[in-house]
Image 1 (cartoon, rainbow, N blue to C red):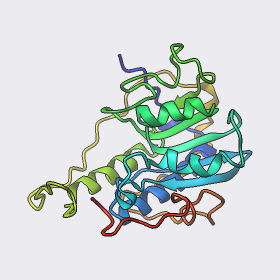
Image 2 (image 1 turned 135 degrees about the vertical axis):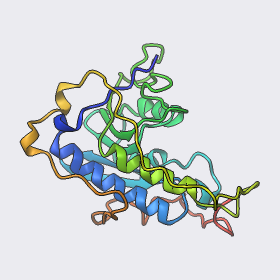
Image 3 (image 1 turned 90 degrees about the vertical axis):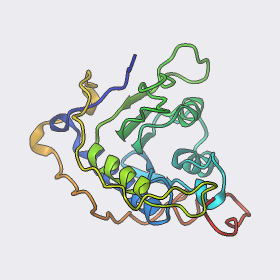
Length: 235
């Protein structure tokens, strides 16, 4: 049963939308570098303390999802539990990343679109809340923030052809779909709501958002320490 929680647009908090816009900027950077467009920002006390985006193709390392990329540089300065930190990520964390977030004791996760194949915050498994885990306490996870923009970024990526893939697929005849199904209905966490009058304006699909200057864990430093990218970039 799908246990993912989505917040209706009219009830979304302006602060959450602001930081999700920053996560989208990181996702756009990933897309520009031919990576699956997922970006994230870790926020504490109203300040971004780490940012990252997918680098799995660049480093030929399937574990370098945006969340794990940022956590690697976050932990030396922020020991667990990270209960005072909120993660903003454009796509629902997969089971692997949700497990890592639970292990470091993240306080809250806000995401854009759901992950129907690998979601670990309720779409497939409820790693975020399951009492079967004996690590840190469950964390709140809510989605639907700039959901359509996150979906369209993913669609644009999967329309492209990756010539470095083991078995590249011809996609010249594919047509970009722009219709998006309505957001799943679900209960809304009260901490994620705010009066409709204070909502920020939406971001048009295709718009490029400029990230703020990079703090530690930002895109300029969030790479495996002491390493250089593999020749050829993508697989």
